[in-house]
Every structure is written in C-alpha cells, then in structure tokens.
Length: 481
Image 1 (tube, rainbow, N blue to C red):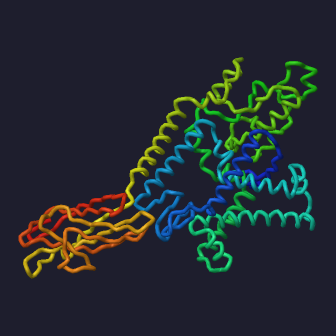
Image 2: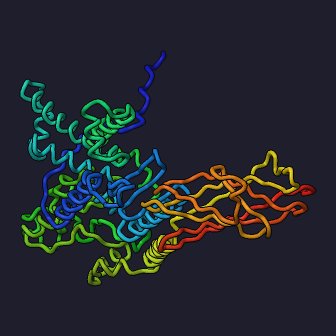
Image 3: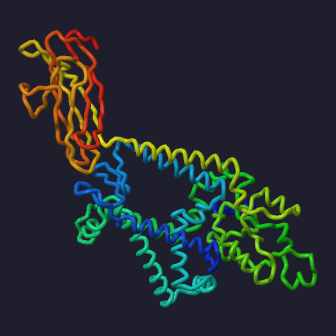
C-alpha cells in the first residue's frame, strides 16, 4: 500500500515579527546620538556651502559626474587622482576591521545605514502604534477601519522617510537648491526621478519591513567578521556562570545560593532589535547594540543585584571572572597588538594621503605626438613634428601658463593659433579655471637634425610658479623606431 508522501522540510524558518520594547540607558542614549548625527550628516551635507571662488561650485560636498570632479570642502579630486578615493575606501575597510577586532559588530549596532534607518522606522512604529505590547495586540487584531487607517498613516510616514532619503542622495550629484527647484517643477533629468523612486522603495522595504532579515540573511558581514575576532575581542556576553540556574527573586530568597542572578524576565529579548536571546550565547543575529545590557542593568538595579550580568566582555575575561578573578575594565581589552597594528596601518594610510594632498600640484601636462605622419619635411629642408598637449589647470581661477621646449637645440614651436613666423622656444597660453586646455603644438628643427629625446615644460605665471614636465621624442628621417 502506497504511503502518502511526507511534506518536504521547510528551507527557511517563518519570520516572527520583532516588536522590540522601549528602553532607556547609556547605550540607548548613545544610539540616539549616533542616529541623530549620522542622519543630520546625510540629510544636511548637500546644503552646506563652501566658497571656492566664482569659477567653481559652492556646494561643500559634490560628486560632479558631468565634469568628472569630486569636491569635499577644500579638496577637489580629479579623475587622475582617484587614488585618493581608493585610499579613503581602504581606510574605511581597515577601520571596520579595527572596530570589529576591538568591539565586535559595534559598527552594525550603531552606525550601519541599515541599523540607523531600521531604528528610525522602529521609533515611527512606537509613535503610531505604541510600545511592544500595544503593537503585538494590534498585529493580532482583525482588520478594522481603525487598523487600516493606522497602518496607512504609519506607512505614509515610511514613504516620506524613504522619499527624503532618495532625494538627499541625488543632491550629492548636483547643486542641491537648483536640483530641488528643477525636481518639483518637472525639469530635472529622468534619472533623478528614477533614482529617488528606487531608493524610496528600497529604504521602505529594507528598513520598514525586512529589518533584521537584512542583518541575519542578506548581509555578508556577520559571516566575514569572525576572521577579525578572537578571544580578546569585546562582545556583548551573557555571564552564564553568574546567571544560571535561573530563578525568581522569591526562589532566591527561599534557597540562597541555589539560583543565579537571572530572573528570566526576558527583558533582554524584548528590547533586542533583532529578537534574539543573548542568553543562548553568541549568535549571527546579535548586532552588538548593547540594548540588552541597558535592560538587564535596569532589572538588576531594581532587584538589588550588581550590574553586568550581560556586559561587554572578552572570552578570556569571562573565563578569568568565572574562575573568581575580578572583572577587568573594558578599555584595557582595546590595547592589544592586533588593534594597535590595525590602528597604525589605518593612521599611516591617512598620514600618507594628507602628505600627498599637501604636495600635489594644481597643474598637469600630457603630450601625445602625431603618429601619422610622424614627421613632415618642409620646403626649406627643416623637419616638423606635431604634438597634442593637454594643459590642466586644477585651480579655481584662470591661469597664464608658459609651455617651453627642453632639449633639441635649434628647434622652435608654434601653435595652431599662431604662425611659423612667430615660432619660438616657448608659448604662453591662458587656461580656464578647473579645466583642461588642448593645444596643438608644431615643433620644427633645422635640416639634418636626427631623432632625439624632447621634453615640454609647463610653468604657471603666478605666485605659485608650479611646474610640470612631460617627455616625448622628436622623429626625423632615418628613425627606425
């Protein structure tokens, strides 16, 4: 007799909506501070102004894709200086390694954009629906007009937050006041509307609905972080040797020493933004936000027991404390070879970038000789080569520059705006601010001149007196190269 087929096991656990409880404490207040600062920076930075003179944009931070420029306050990055951006990315990566090695996933718990926006949406939930138990009750209630209106109001706030998040993002790529005016008048580029729509959707989806699922399932960082952590990394830890076995206050009074400090109030679970139970040990869902520490410390204070049942601690310190040694201050765990090495590497890269910024020139010169034909014989027997010069003026004001020949005695040059009769060993050109000027230069040498090395030098005719040199070759008959 055929047996009915067994249902296939589920590949994923059904999601249980997390309704975290409001809590107050030093870590919660620190999260408030970080959220306020990061959101203020994100939403407010495009509106900051920075005077760069009449020839450059006055937005403090601007990614000008049209002109291939990146402005950050007094720093302007050109395409050929992208190594500065690469250096910042490397510093960000090493900084993340440093933070993870020192204090675990503190980045995830406080400053990660997913955490910041999720925290913001959770505060919207409390504002509209109430705290944990009110939200649970509303979720379980049938759909009535009151529930529909409340959900519509809350989700409308979600959309407004997502819209302003997308709107702030596009302001980094154009002048913010101008873009806002063009956006609302319908004159902005289509890509602006598409970008805002996409970011609105992703912000509402990830921060408003998926939330802890992003941290647990989508983000690769929890899987990578273990390579940067060891037994001396500070983690949010439940001290089971002190808390177990769990029991109520009355049980502890009846049987002194028979139960631990944990009264199984589940406050640590109720305040967790990802809904985990820290008492089960380290988990991939723990983002090290330390709200469970605030909750547990509050309960310990209410029942007259010492704080620190849940605390930042290293595995080494936990073993020592379980053996009866006094707890070590958390700051001492930060000063160890690994964190110092990460900090030294991070600081060295930063100092190297500052040094390079201080020494960089605001001019540039590149030379490309014509290849077809490589030279021309003139009617008087002289030999002419043609070159395309690109003169970069990275300053915010127009500059007069002198291009001179270096080498090839007897040679002279002229440009496509002058005549051969005006040929000389140098040319003076005015270059517009923050731009690259293309110059066609013709170099003529006397009859019989052999192929030789040649260089062009560029010198600014201002107080800075910056100079650049570009080497090339002069081609003549008989040259086999």
